[in-house]
Image 1 (cartoon, rainbow, N blue to C red):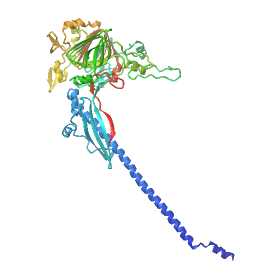
Image 2 (image 1 turned 180 degrees about the vertical axis):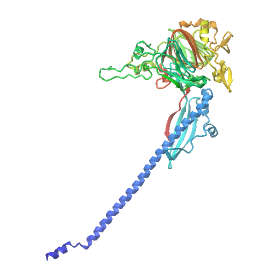
Image 3 (image 1 turned 120 degrees about the vertical axis):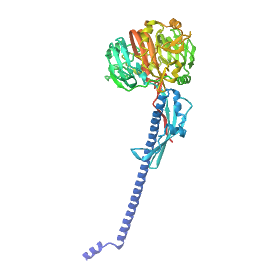
Image 4 (image 1 turned 90 degrees about the vertical axis):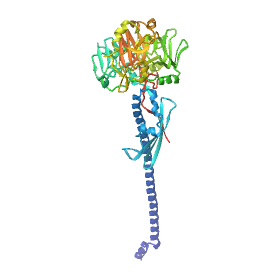
Length: 567
C-alpha cells in the first residue's frame, strides 16, 4: 500500500506541463521584445551618434573653409598690396569680390567641393557673400562656408577683417632699412637694434639689448654682425640707466617683499634681461611706406586729430602747407591723435598729449623736443603693472615723414660737411620709391618700369624755398635765414622725446645727445661729437593693442575673424 501511494504522489497532473510551456513561451516573447527593442535602440543610437559625429565633422570642414579663404585672400592681396605702393588705396582690391568675373580673376581657386585628407567622406564650399565698401580701410569680407559629411551639412558665416597695423619695425630702439652701423664708444642703446642688412660695430659701443641683422640680396648683405660691443650688468643698469630707459626683466629681483616667506616674481617681458644676443641672417622686416597720405588723413578725421597751443587750435585733422611748431614751458604744443601736414614740419620745445604728426615732406627737429609729463620706469620696480598703467597716460609724440627727418641747423657749414658726406653714395644706394614721391622729387630714374631714387640727398629735389632758391632733399621749404633764426647749433641739442619714422633719411649733427623713443628710417646719418644715448619707449611695442594706439605708420595686418556664427 505504501509503495502504490508513493507512485501516485510522484505522478504529475496532466495540466502542469502545458502551463510550463505557456510560461516559457511568454518569457521568450518578452526576451524577444526586449532584444528587438535593444537592437533597435542600439541601431538608432548608433545612427544618432553617427549624425552627431558627421555634424561635428561638417562643422570642422566649414571652419576649415573659413580659415583657408582667410589665408588665401591675405596671400593674394599681399602681393597686390606690395606691388601697388603699400597704400590704403590698394584695399579697393576687395570691393568687387562678390562679382563672379572679378572673383574668377582674383581668386579662381576659392574652395568648391574641397576636401580634407583626414575627413575623406566630407567636403566644403565657400562663397563670398558681401564686402563692406563704406571705408577704404579696413575691409570686412563676409563669407559663407558650408561643410558636408555623409549628407549632414553645417554652414558658418564669418566676417573677415583685412586692415593695417603699426609695423614690427617699431619694436626696436633703432631700425634701419640699410646697413646698420654704430661707430664710437659714446653710443648707448637701451633697447634692441636691427638692420635690414649687415650690422657693423666700431669703437665698442654699448647695446643693452639684442642685435639683429638681415639677409638682403638687394644690398648684397648676408646679415652679418661684425665688430665689438659691450653691455651693462643688470645691477649696473638699475643704478645708472635714466628714468626714461626701459626697466629690467625681471623688473625687480625675486625677493620676499611682503614677508610671507614666498618668492616674489616681477617679470617684465620687454625689459632688459642683462644679455645682448646677436642674431645674424634674419629675415627682412618690411619697412612701411608713406605713399599716398589719404589713409592717414582719413585716420585724422576719424579720431578728430588736432594740435593746439594755449587753448588755440593750430591743426584740425589736416594742415595744407608747411608749419612751425614751437612749444614753451608756459604754452607747450598739445597733440591729440593723428594729424597730417602736407608740407614740412619744423618743431622744437615742450610737447604734451599723445599723437603722431605725418609730414608730406620733411620733419625738422631744430632744437630740443621734450615732454611736459614723460613716462618713467623705476629701477628696480616691484609694481611693473602699476607703472605701465601710469605711463599709459604720459606724453607721447610720433613724427612720421614722407621725406626725411633732419636734426639740427642744416644751414651751417659744419652740418653740411659732416652730415652731407653720408647722405650720398656710396653710403646710400638707389632704391625703389612710391610713384607719389614724384611730387617731392624722389623719382629720379626708372628701372623695369618702376620708379627709383638715386640715393643722393644732397642734390636739388626740383622744388624751391620761400625765396625762390633751389631746395635740396634735406632742406626745408623755409628760407635759410629764417631757419637760422629759430634753430640752435648742433651742440645745443641735448634731448629729443619722440618715436620717429621716415621713408628716406634720418640725419643730423648733435653733441651730447639723448633720444627717448625710437628711430626708424631707411638711411641713417647721425653724426655726434659727444655721445648718443637711445632709450627705447616700450609703450611703442604695444602698437595699438590692449593699452593704447599712438597711430604710428601702418603695415598690412594679419587678417582676423571679426566673428563666426552658425547659420
